[in-house]
Length: 201
Image 1 (cartoon, helix red, strand yellow):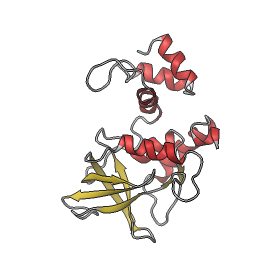
Image 2 (tube, helix red, strand yellow):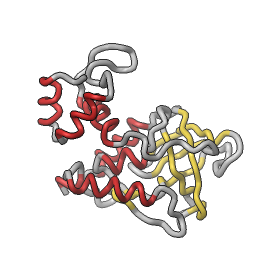
Image 3 (cartoon, one colour):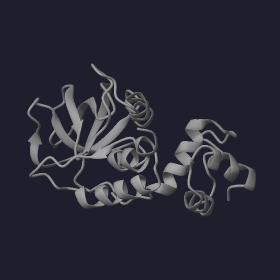
């Protein structure tokens, strides 16, 4: 259960009260313990605690998802992965575009919340981390990047996290429509609560 002081600290960081209550009911938060069991109150820990309440597994990892590994980051919605086993990714480094979302740009004309989105993706998906991926109907975009839904090592949908935290907009790349309905609903909530870019840009 989150303490009153922790809830105040999260509210000052812009986290809605409903999220704080949900985070408190979910058990021990990252504010109280990180993965090593040590006390933590960092901004990243606060964001993770709030994030778990905001996106509580609306997009679970499908059984048929392919295993992959993070090779390097490009920006908030593009990275390089190496596949393992059967699936849309080869066993060589492949540039991947996160399906159904668009994060603000960091190259050329840097856009509002672009650096924050890129940093969050790097935090969720450190180099060398195992991930799971799933393709839809159209496998590549016009730049030859693989279009994939992606889950991190904890089983969180990366698209869901970024949209819920206001770090990405939903972008429909037809005919693909996997998770489109869920992500659109999550974006509407982020817009309503003015999270991330919706409150600043």
